[in-house]
Image 1 (cartoon, rainbow, N blue to C red):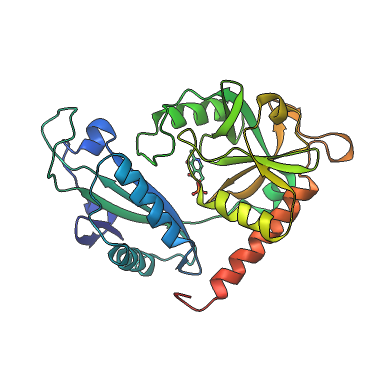
Image 2: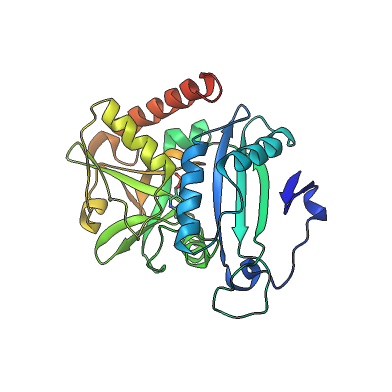
Length: 289
Ligand SMILES: Cc1ncc(COP(=O)(O)O)c(C=O)c1O
């Protein structure tokens, strides 16, 4: 079951105008909210990021946070899986094709769900492969825009090489990956780039930083150079769907040195375990705590 513009229906029945600016221009924003045991994870934070994306593109939010919460709750209840990815998208709506944002359009609001399948135990144990590519995207990667062609191109280049992700570098510094944020471990310290217009402010990125702080794991939020990335002891990607996943091969070379080369490292393994514990704790907390 999906939600489109006020109605719940099977996805096959959902129709929108070909003049929808989401279709014509990619003029819209979206969120993907993980749901565990039918409870959305970090929903408030996802709705705050949605609002920032909408503000950045001058789109008026059609729903209050409580209305979004209600809609999302109905989608979760109307779909068969205990663990889901709830995808929501708001576009500016349909209008005669013209680049200038028209005022007063009725936005198109779409919510759907799919089964959430976290990385398998084998993948967590082995880690994933990635390649490093120049970040060819635009300069407002902080907006969670449906215009994802740049990300799709980069991810496809990674897939061409049998890799799970493309890790991106702009002007000699790490930004993020095509669909995740990036952390490295260098000389025992966890490093991740600061939030800026050049990266998406990941909800998982924030959770991981909270975990690092709460457990006194040495870390710094500061620019990370390409050479630090390439010589890191550990590299991880973070996202709602991939959680905390080790990258163990970068451009065909093993990440790290010695015994742990090409294998997930100890800091990432610890943070992965802490992330799983945190998820369980949050899911067991009383509702709306
Ligand atoms: C480009 C990009 N960066 C980072 C992330 C991670 O964000 P989150 O942790 O909120 O899933 C995503 C998620 O899809 C993404 O597409």
